Image 1 (cartoon, rainbow, N blue to C red):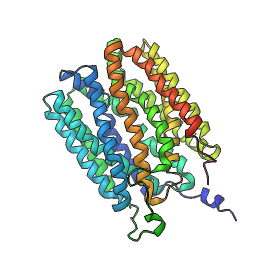
Image 2 (cartoon, rainbow, N blue to C red):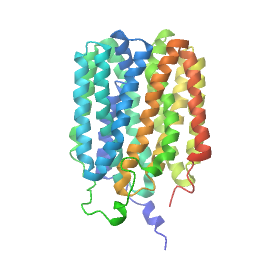
Image 3 (cartoon, rainbow, N blue to C red):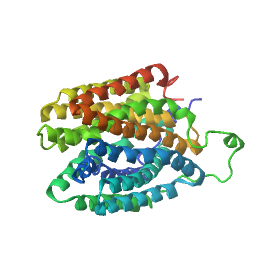
Image 4 (cartoon, rainbow, N blue to C red):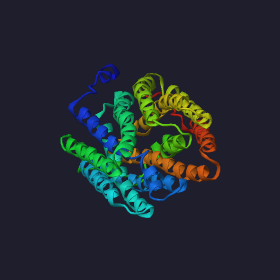
Length: 393
């Protein structure tokens, strides 16, 4: 007799799920405040467009390096230690930005910061996938992702305002405080316990750090997030060059659009399959890059924010659910680490690449070029990235 009807009623909004969403909210507030502002900080310290891109790129390189180790360590020794260690590194490096004298030193601390972000964000996603019932994984990851989206609706605009009205010191202190709140809330979560006695089948040779079953969605998200590298690293600088103020509103409308899209497409993926979320989402991402290529006024940036939010809100939670859907609990950390390796690597490669393009040809041409990885991601998903069957087992 099928147990699907019973599974469909499994409780999603438990105490631990509410806590992990709050934890993720404050973590992402601290993170998102820095994304549009640190490239400005780099230029203020004497850097150019290429150096501004490196501020994002080098951060994601260290995140990529640590994620597989963080995921595997979380699987072997537990999620809590990896999570709290990552948060501690995050807080200390953000505070260190206050005393940075040159771009070179900023890049050094930014590299260390990536270790904290890579560890904490891998662990928090793994904890969420432990807590969410498998029958509601697409929906649950959609709601969980809303916490980062809520932060994105507020934090970039607030960060840009703090820089213009107060100082970078004020920005860094606030960011560190938000992550400290996240750490305090994290202490109250009941974490998945690592089994001391591992079944024989779990001891068979496996990839020690990366989860093979997560490779297909990881390849797709890599090319999708190359576009995000162009947005997060250079949108504020692009708008300033065009004489457009209040560009922080782009991130607000983007986040609101993302907030609406995530649960809608998450439920659609659970019920009808991932294709109906991922394919339209990638097309929306591609269209966004073309809009930014032609944008000359704030209104066009806001339209781009809405379209990009729909696209990213459809693609990211669906691909992440694909990455963890069919793995054993003792491999969820590795699966999340694999997925976010591709996620971060795309942002990092994109930031560095688009910085060089912007310096050589300008921001408009850069956004036209950013449409190419979106197209590549669509081709990869269509031919090799699509799941072999329905979402549900």
